[in-house]
Length: 69
Image (cartoon, rainbow, N blue to C red; front, side, top):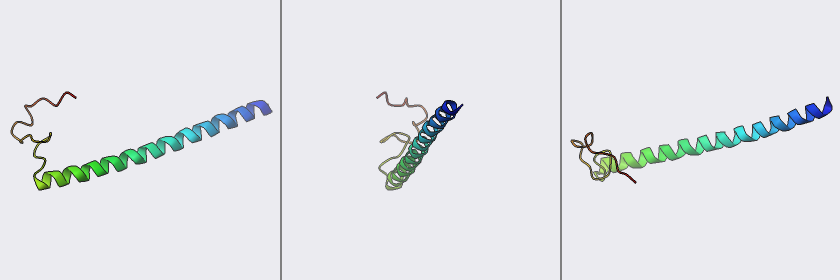
C-alpha cells in the first residue's frame, strides 16, 4: 500500500510539473500574440502594412493566395 501511495505521489508531482510548464507556455504565447497584434496595428496605422500580407492592397487580399513559405 505504501509503495502505491509513493508511486501516486510521484505521478501527481509529475502532472503538476507538466501543468506548470503548460501554463507558462500559454502565458508566453498570449504575450507573443499581444505583441504581434500591437506591432501589426502600428504597421497598419503607419501605412507599412495595407492588407493581409505586407504590400498587398485590400482589394486583392481576398483573391490572392497566401505566401508559400
